[in-house]
Image (cartoon, rainbow, N blue to C red; front, side):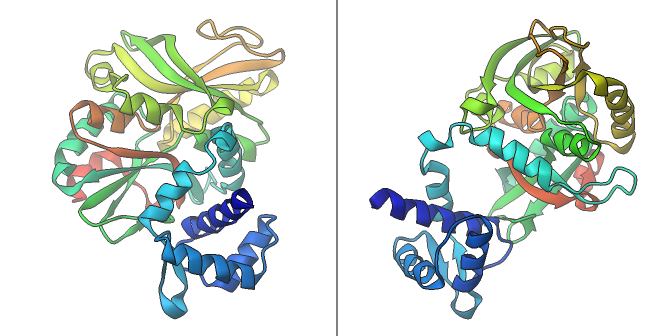
Length: 331
């Protein structure tokens, strides 16, 4: 019974976190129904009252409820065992939800979200620019949010600045729109020597993790992205994907188009059925290595500036992004 009750609380918190505005009980019940949860409005209101008392939500009167920081923390820690494989599921869900058009350069793409304190902004910008210039991130665009504003469905807290970097899962969504199914296998630390990928030194499978691998590597102090950006040698975040072998010519064309619009990130594309950096691939598939979108923030963390990173944090309209070279004029 207790476990079932907690499931209901977590499902309500999920709805509130994904909403850009506060929601009333009836709207929460409808959204839960769309997600496959059968909770009546009366039941939802009962749980909302309990969640208000526990500090997980705040009652805004007629405007409805909003999730609190304590509620967001509850979401991050709830049912950790059952969240094994959560990253793989989230990759597929967000890729499906994208509606980006390369031709029009409009539509939603996937962003990672990172928080830093306001007083560290200019030094952080300096560190990030070197990574973008070296081509070790996902393209050349990002989003900024100051305290009191939003990036997608994320609210920026007081004294903080939010940075949205393009998530490499954006490629999965673009490929899917072109009829190419992409399998994301793992995230890892990719060693570069003279600006060339030579091997993965650490890997974490997406289907066995509840946290994005690059978040772990950044907080563990395991990256040397700034060094790689300045010298060509170091360890950066990257992911390994498999794509259908028959789609390689189309992917090569897409890669050129993505480079031209500032969404480059593919570091290597393997040959059909052949290992890529000694990583075996399935029959009829080819390996693909993609730069981690959080690499610019890894360099910030390496410089001694604390960051809070959330891979695959939100969807955002592409037109709201700015080029990285405009950072110094943005604050």
